[in-house]
Image (cartoon, rainbow, N blue to C red):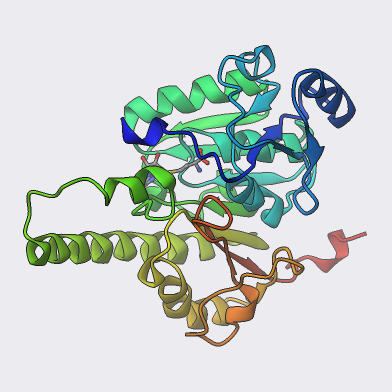
Length: 298
Ligand code: SAM
């Protein structure tokens, strides 16, 4: 397929699974055969020369290194869960970000990983096992049907919401556009807009639902889409509810230059990555609210 063409112009990024391997050992091991250095902004991400193929590398096969890109690796870091927290990963398969959350929490605390699709639940379970993430409980079901008032979720302090999206920021999707289309352009556009509208409706529902969990202090919303309708527009429509519930937009990776499209108030808090310059087009928004029980804070 087209998307196996290696991108020879941009560096290759990988994430160290710190549950299994420390930074120093990772640099040492990968450095035997490749030029490798740490990313200057995202912790636990390593930078390798363009086109480096690590698919069969023993460290990848044993779950010490994940072939997870830099933009994708920014999401869990943006949420910043602490060891010991309870965290909900709302739409979690295949589990790259779930595994990353577990690593950031050093395996301490609890992660509830929710996934709707049965086949994808299997992949999620495989990823979690490979990562050695023992503190993850997999939940096969619809995130929208989880009852926020259920005592099982009363201690959830952070939610990672990475809902289904158009994928328009990923290389595979962009290359798809180069394929000949059997539709006339007009028809393709109508179908495309309909699909985006449906996705955006789900994304808004899911974000509203995440905002309704009583003890949640941080929510990260992310997509691998470049479309405003799935990104800034979703945030814009939920911002009034978020504010009513005491949430504000915070600024993930303040040194990162690419921020949200200036179509909403607070767009400078939002983060975008460029599908060409940064290899993948991601969008990240971070909501925070002050702990309801300030006495718990150190
Ligand atoms: N966070 C994942 C990772 O980093 O590996 C990728 C998540 S993917 C973008 C979105 C996932 O959400 C898909 O696996 C999809 O099946 C799942 N999903 C879609 N609707 C859902 C729902 N209502 N409840 C739970 N999961 C859902």
